Image (cartoon, rainbow, N blue to C red; front, side):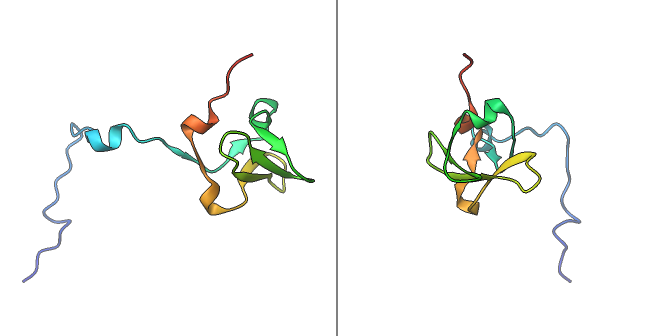
Length: 86
């Protein structure tokens, strides 16, 4: 008889985040289409944008509410989105 791995798994809420995962940055695949967010990009064409720091190609969504990557490999991490306050 084979054991189901989920039958022997016991979750405890006191378990924290491993040190290995603690320093990882979140990936960003969409940002609001605001003036502050747009300041991180350079316009290129009608609705294409180039991220100033990473040169990733993003675009304005069809509903013009958000900015999203053109290619799935052009995601940013949360450090890429830090905008200096003026």
